[in-house]
Every structure is written in structure tokens, then in C-alpha cells.
Length: 323
Ligand SMILES: [Zn+2]
Image (cartoon, rainbow, N blue to C red; front, side, top):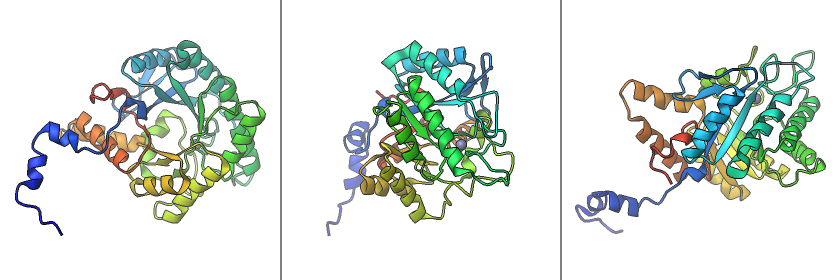
């Protein structure tokens, strides 16, 4: 065993040049994905409580916001379309399609547009599934609706689709539907390990997706269940997912590496609204410096093996000094 002499550690932490030399983990704005909420019939923008400079936008305001984000170095966006009309079984995805079309018409290939695919913003009850008369998940109808949403998004020009519902079999169903519709080139970035969590609160207000009854524990993963969490991502990989994702990020740090090694796929992390809001709250109370705290969390996610990170702070890339 090598016994380090006094000063041998401190010496190498002394200057920024030395710390950078030995940093091991790096990333740039190319690995960050910015969420965008586009609300049908909204004029202008309204802030999302607790999420700093994050807002919900009407379509025109969203385009202006994305133009600013592009100028700040953001290249990847994930769209959360929020329709104004809700249903229970026959759901319309026209707002998804028309929003994707507007974004791609404006920006073309200057950006990569992922589209979140779920039903919770479209259903009157706020669950991620179509429910039967007893209130149980109607899986066949749900998979059909998810596949339709994905095909509509891809047909409108989406560069990738990202199913977040956690229904069994949805990746295979969506892949088959995309292929049948001629969208073989459109990748699926699956929310493959998504825990039931207390950290989704600010998002549910932004996406109009809070469940009106019950909770999502019967389809999201129990945070205590490591095997189930890893198996869920493996299943998505087997069904044809191109990229995987863990969510929330900080409750999944120990899973990112193993899932990537087992599946051989890139695994991203979603720094969810409650995580981001906690950084905002710390900074507002004067307990932390926001940009430094954000950068710290992103570095830790990279250190844990995250290939990419979805964060409300992607647009702060320049402020963080990222290339
Ligand atoms: Zn959902």
C-alpha cells in the first residue's frame, strides 16, 4: 500500500489548472436537454412557480424563448405539449402535431426536438393511461393512444419521441407503429426507470398533469426496488428503445452505471422539477450560489455515468461556462 506523503493531495488541489487537469468528468451544452412547455390557447408566457426562469408558453412565445435558448447554446429540447381540451378515451393529439410543425418550420435542423409522449396532459383525470369503467388501466387502449401520439409527433417532424408513461409494452408498440408509418429513423428515448416520487410537484402544475384521484404508484417504480428499477430499463432496451433514462436523477445515481453496462445503451438522467426547485429555493434563501450548485449536480450525474441530462437549467449553459 502506498502511503501518501503530507501535502501530496493538497498540492494537486491547489490551483484551478491542476483541478481541471485531473477533473475526469467533463460535459458541454451538447449533453443537456431543455424542457419546453407549450400550452394550447395560452397567449404569452406565465412562470412555473418554484422553477426560477422556467415558464409555460403559448406557441409564439415558445418560439421566441427557444430562439433565445439556441443563442445560449442549447441544441436539444424536449417538448411537453399541454392541450386545452381533455378527454377520457378518444384523445386528440392535434396540439402536439401543430406545435412540432411550428417549431421545426421555424428552426429546422438547428435543434433536435424530442417530444414527450404521455397521456396525463390529455386526460381529464390526469393519469398516464386510459382507464376502464372501474378506474383500472385499459392497457390495450392506452398503448394504441400512445402509439398514435408518437406517430403524430413523428409525422409532424419530431426528431425523437420520449414515452414517459411507464406502461408495460409501450416501447415495442410505439416502435412498431413508427416503423409501420415510415418513421424508422426516429429514435425512442424511453423514460425507462421512472420512480414514483415526491419530486415531480412543480412539473405537474406546468403540464396540467396532476392526477385528480389516486396516485401513480401502481405504474411507477417503488424507490426501494432496485431489481425492478434495473429490469424496467432492460425491458425497454429489449423492446427497442434507442436511449434510456432514469428519473428523478438524484434518486437514481446508483443505477445509471449498471443500466448502461447491462444494456449497452446510453442512459440519461432527468433532473426533475423538484430537484431543480430545491436548488432555486436554496439560492433564494442565500444558502447556495445557484449556478455553482447546478453545475455541481450536473457534474455528479456525469460522474455517475449519465450520457445526457434533461434539466431546466440547460439554457444556463453559457452562464455555467460550458462550450
Ligand atoms: Zn404521464
